[in-house]
Image (cartoon, rainbow, N blue to C red; front, side, top):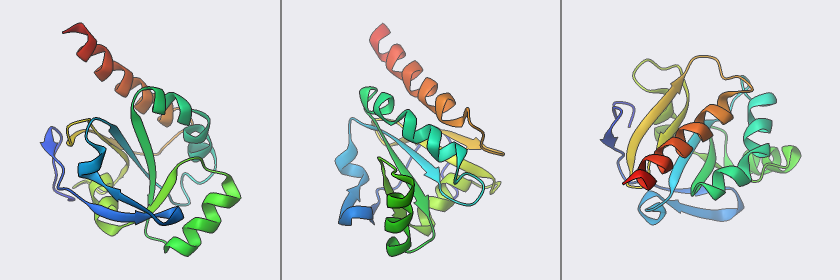
Length: 146
């Protein structure tokens, strides 16, 4: 998945998330999917911002998943400790999708048809979640235009 380019279909994936939730990209048809890397660089402020905006993402038909290479047991504890409202996934292939060919991505946005629409690179900041939410809103607005 690392070589998936912007405006290309994302290979269907099936992974298990926290809460023993099975996540299938094909079952998320009609939903936008924001994948956010969970690591030491964004543990505090970035994940807190995604948490605070979580309901706004849902209103825009967008689900948020945190992605890490930690095992699910550790992710369950982490999710509980931070009281994250979204599921966490342990999957190396999804981390590669987020990282991209440059290896510095911290989030990826898949549209409601399974196409990779954006990859966000560099250092995540407190504004990262809002930037992704604005992108989703813009895509929704474009659909309303037609």
